[in-house]
Length: 220
Image (cartoon, rainbow, N blue to C red; front, top):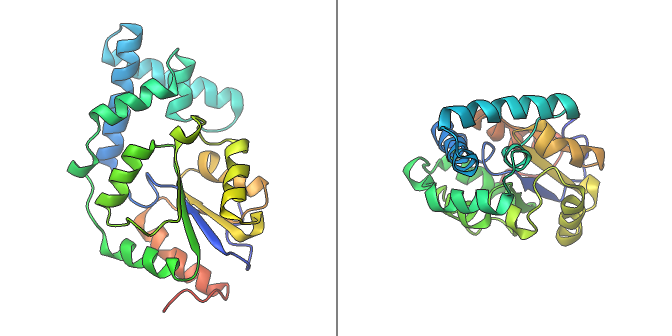
């Protein structure tokens, strides 16, 4: 991975969960909701569903050579993305876990002065909107591309080409930022997009300096 190799970046496409915020407790509740969904689907105990999902993710990842998403695991076990995300909407409460971080709000506001900003998430639009609002980032993104736009989970070639078309960005102009290389960044990089792996708040905050170091006038 060679992040930020392009000096012609005009737009930034952020992943949401695990990228614009990092919260292990909320991530665990997402996993727990998926386990409950699979347990109810198959009529088994939650402990059995959890182990089955772990084994299935390992098997699929080994077969494909890339990390598999929660959506892929649930679909492999006979579920579907629509019902999984209906379960998420009904059961997840991001407001009880997430807090505003003024450092991230300031970063995104400064970046928005120089770049078009977008979100591309495997979350559904209803939850993504609630999360963005809770983080204090509402109104800072020109587009939110969510899984329920076409019910196609990342990584997805058709969705990626649609995003580039709708944002008007050439691959070399679109920086993709995410916390999972296989899911968020591998495909954009193959298309010629610069990419940046960010798995902590500190790594996300470094993005500004990295862009500045490339001669991009970010800081006000």
